[in-house]
Every structure is written in C-alpha cells, then in structure tokens.
Image 1 (cartoon, rainbow, N blue to C red):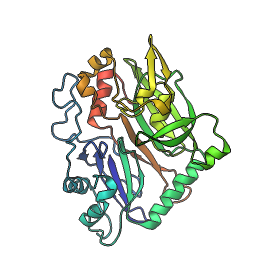
Image 2 (image 1 turned 120 degrees about the vertical axis):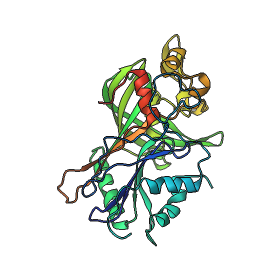
Image 3 (image 1 turned 180 degrees about the horizontal axis):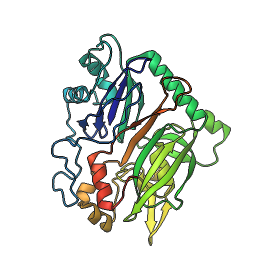
Length: 336
C-alpha cells in the first residue's frame, strides 16, 4: 500500500508508499511531493531483491512481499521510512493497530492519525491518512458528494481469471454480510425487499473497463460507486471472472466442459483458488505457490479535492506492486 498523510487545510502533507496487503507483509518505496494535496508517482524504486523476472522464481514467487511475521516495530519503521517530505511542525497486526506508534514516530504529539481512505485488507494500493480533523472531514465530504453524484473517485486495477463478456459496463448487485461457518462473507441477494434493505442489504454499483486481455485473463479497471465489504471481488465473481489470488470468493465460479457458472454463495465455502495448468505455466508457478498467490486488486488512483472548491480534482497514483507487474509481464498484459 502507499500511504498518504495529510496535515491541514492548506494542503500540507506527509507522503509515502507501501506495497501489498497488511496481512501478507509489505515493502516500501518513496515518491516526490507535489503542491497542495497533489501527489503523483509514476515511477517506483524497486526494493532490494525485487527485480522482475519472467522465469521460474523458486522460493520468491511474489516479489515485493515480505514474510508474514512482520513485527509492529518493522511496520512502523517502514511507514516512517516512506515519509518523503513534511511541511509544518513536526493483537492482529493491522494499519489501525500501529497508528498510535506511527503518530508518535512522526512527532505529531497529541494529534491522532485517522484513516480517511484505504484499499481492502488483502489488496494493495493507496492509503490516505490525516492528523487534521478538519482536513479529514473535508475529504470525507468530497467522497460522499462524489458518490451521490455517481462520480468515481477511486480506480482499482485487477487481474481476473477469465475475460468479461463486455469490454466495459456497470455491475449492479444487492449484497449482504452473512456469517457462514464462523466467517463473515459477502453474499448477493436477488430482488431484495424493503425489509431486506432495512436489515442491512445494500444495493451496490461498480463501473468496469477491460484494459487488456491475454492467456485467458484480463487487466480490468474497476471504479466502485458504493462501498461494501469485498464489493469488487464479488462483483467480478458475478461476471464469472474472479480476481486472481481471490482465495475467498473464487470457489463460487464452477466449470463444466469449459463453461463457467455460478454456484450458490450460501453453500460454497471459501477455498484456495484453483488455476488450470496452462495458466500456471504462463505464471511460472507450481500449484503450491499458486495457493499463496496474492490478491491482484490494487487501488491505483484516487482523486482528491483541489485547494479551492472549483479546482479540478487532484490525482494520486500508486505504482503497481512488483508481483503484480510480474504477473502482467507473464500474461503479456500492459497497463495503458
């Protein structure tokens, strides 16, 4: 993930970039700061040992990922090391759990960091943090207003196992959280009633656009216009094209004689994603390595409000993680 920390209404900020989901480990790189809220990074500095290779990778199949036993101190150090520029005065391992240490490490005193926007726990990409309540409020209002106006502010990159039938379009589905075998999972709801809506069912909407295809896979841009747990993963499953590395929902897509179909969500338990032999060969992975494949869902672009109300929104970009770039290389896909 790439962390962007905003300080005040005048746009003063602290910026860094962190790759990968918090559960799987991470590596850090830095990027230059632009004026106001605007931060744009189009080039990334590869961490040591993460050079992309298209051939077999042995014990390092996913460059850019660090060991799962990453400590709290290492995470705080990694985030602090990702700080590029600072203007103004100075249980389970998760981003939220280390915010107090990070705040102290950055010398923010009594100011508490809060998460304004972040990608999902298993996905990679941008993380927007703020130590200024007024700035956080302004950003949240911008996101809420944009959502109501159906103007997407976030763009994700995803690699899918399968190619959507349409090159672009909208995905609409009513979703709910349901506890299955002790795990909260997102489940589609057909024709939800008013009672269903009152009980937590939410109508969700995402835009998608296929950027490139190859080897039976696709590079897709996804823009959620609603917010719901695992929304994008479930939306792509409904297109019969689960996200590569989705070890939670991909089992809902069955195949018989080469034809894909949806299995009942309520009775399909999560399991490791199974890839066919041809795809494993293209990715230079063994089945055991594929069982550890990271989720290829990356919050690549985020729009923030300009300094003044009528200013054009400012764009934040997070480069793809090394393992994601390597997958694109293996599949012959290019991010335009």
